[in-house]
Length: 121
Image (cartoon, rainbow, N blue to C red; front, side, top):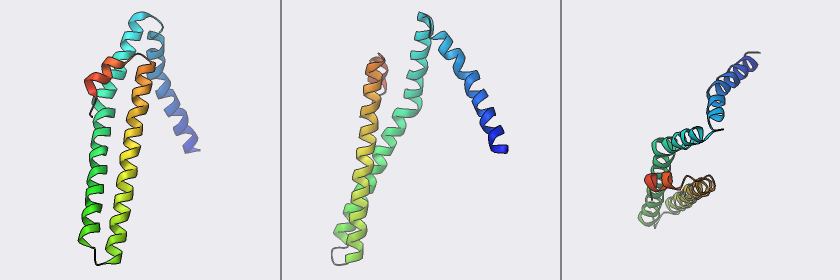
C-alpha cells in the first residue's frame, strides 16, 4: 500500500518537472533550453562521473597487476590478482562503452558542442 502511494507521488513529481521541459521544447527557445539543460547535466554529473570511474577501473587493474606479480609464489594471491585484473578491464570497458553511447546520443540529438566542452578523455 505504501509502495503504491510512493510510486504515485514519484510519478507526480516527475511529471511536474518534466512536462514543462517538454512543453518548452516545442518551440525554438524551448529546444535551446533543453540543450542547455542536457549540457549542464553532462558537464556537472555524467562526464566527471565517467572519468572518475575510469580512474577507479585503472586503479583496480594496477592493483591486480601488483598483486599478481608480488604474489608470484602464492597461488591464492595470483588468483586474487587475476580477478582484480579481470574486473579492472571489465570496468574500463563498461565506462568506455558508456562514453561511446553518450557520444552517439549527443551526435544524434545535435549536442556535439556540449561533448567538446565536457569530454574527460
